[in-house]
Every structure is written in C-alpha cells, then in structure tokens.
Image (cartoon, rainbow, N blue to C red; front, side, top):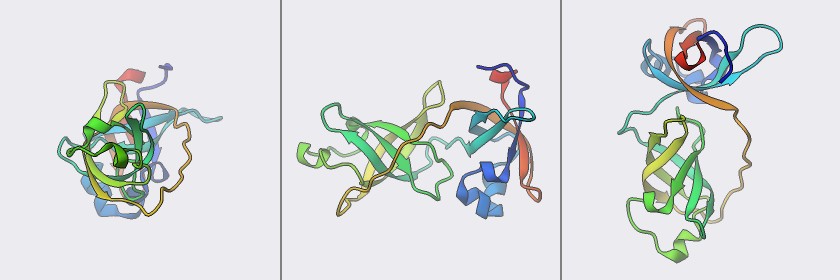
Length: 175
C-alpha cells in the first residue's frame, strides 16, 4: 500500500450515479462515520484522492445485479450491480451461493440473469454475492466488458459537504 496521507479528498463525481443525482440518498448513505469502499487514484498534480466511493452494504441489504460472466465448469462467476445501485463493484460468486438449487442445464446459461443478493466483503475489500435469488432470465445474454478499477480500500467518511458535493475519507491503512 503506498504511503500517503490518511485523509483523502473525494468529489461528487466519485460517487455512484444514484448518489450523484439524489441528495437525500447521499444524506442517508454518506453520513459522518459511514464505512466506505473506494479506489485510490494518483493525480499528476496534488495529493492522491478517493474515487469509486461507495457505502459498504449492511449484512441484510439487498442489491440487484446481472450475471456478467460465469464458467459452468468451474462454478464461479461475477455479477455486476445495476447502474442505480449504491454499491458498484463487480461481485464474485459460486453457483452454491444461489439460495435455491439450479439444475446443470440452467446453470450453463447464467450469463445475463438478473438476480438479487446480499454482499459479503472479504478482508481485502472484494465483494462476494451471497444468498442469490434469480429475479429474471434473459431472452439472450448481454455482453459487458471488464476494466481494472485499481486498488480497493476501506475507509470512514470524516466530512461530507452535501451542498458542495465533496468530502474526505479517512483510511488508516494509508497513514
């Protein structure tokens, strides 16, 4: 982990789209003391900052997403949360994480399936989908391309100026 100051700037544009658009959602989900995940970015001029800032879902929070890819032979895949989810990172899953058993024939066709699930974070901040339930099966699977999001870290919102659209996250791992 690079050595940088432990308080990092984040801007309105660094939040998930739903939090960018809705002040009430920001007030509810980004209060002082809120645990967040973020990606550390270096900028050419000035200190590093936090991007892809999102609240850590509570144990019972339900997220909606679409199966991005799935390997029927390995039984593992990734789910991408829907655009308006406050949690935006792709989540790893195993076919055993589905709350009801899915037959081999259907399991081979999981790509594009819309599902709801809970999020469990691993110690390194990666998300895993748990208690997955199928919401709908697609007529055909949709393609989505993966991209690298950098280093994911945990932090706590220290201040957030709702009217100005910026705040600071404290990340002890960086200090």
